[in-house]
Picture 1 (cartoon, rainbow, N blue to C red):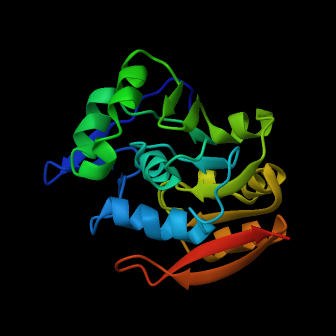
Picture 2: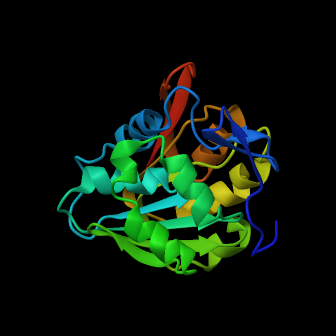
Length: 220
């Protein structure tokens, strides 16, 4: 994975972006925004835990849908969002993907304008966003922040194992505030073990749609 590479896409049914690099869709075929709310918001007990200055971090920015769902949930609470993305999509492709989600798309114009201009720091409502481009195996260790909640949203562990490695899960733990949480759609055993070995208490919960299980974790 090399910094500066862009996402390469196919479009399923003209609506759902699919990474040709990882042969995996960017969001659930059964409803991406509802999946985000189920997995990443509910999985991290959000928006209930939100307070001014709350810090959310993410592996895998993709279309920005998770960020927009968080902004919708945050309302008038100022929070921080940091995302790590190796293969950024173009603004045109992001806009096309977000057209499927009217609630999220309604917030997206400032984000899309900034993205087209090459800006990776911008605000969406009261959410202060920083997208860090490059391989997370390099960029996350160099990050000086700590998150109160993590959205672990890389492509499938079977197709993108680098983003789920024990070493990277240890970096997630090292960049998690005391009592912080993480959530992901995957219940793959090696991901759960990696989080446990890194110091999280881990449990499976019901997944979204056809996924039987997902994973939630809390820093011990």
